[in-house]
Length: 204
Image (cartoon, rainbow, N blue to C red):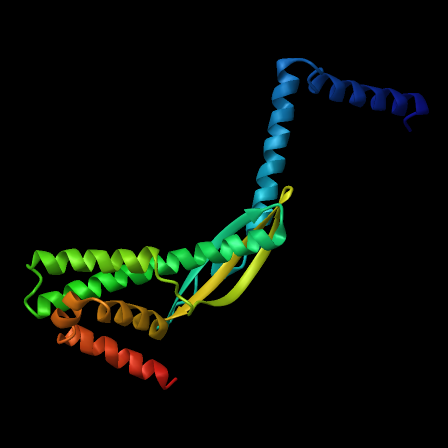
């Protein structure tokens, strides 16, 4: 049966081996070990943060009646972070709306045989820019938000919805204000379909 002296000797040997395997403070090996530990801690923190983010952040809902977009905002102030996230989501929806407006007007111009008219082309570009930068769209609907601590800051994820009926009305209103487009594209099948979608949205 091992004596107490044997146990003590074994423990001392184990401690000595651990001490030998650990780099001494101030050596390059010690600095590298600390950096590796910090890196592992940072990676673990990121993985834990990502795991808590809801699925709608990476995969916004898809609907035939509305568009959804996600925005991200960061600030030391929680309300500002949330506002920034909502505004970022709205900006992405405005871009989608302007892209839809441009495509719709170009399609209507082709159908009416006016796509080669430089005046019509220039007017389409002008109206698209107005929708993208100047129109105040009131039809945005906040759907969800998710707060997350980001060091000393708050990070917010915001999900915003824009019903297609509201977006279509914005496009129609801007075209009606244009004497050039109002007379050129509103007789097209594309425009008739837009007006039909607007009427159907009113019934829902």
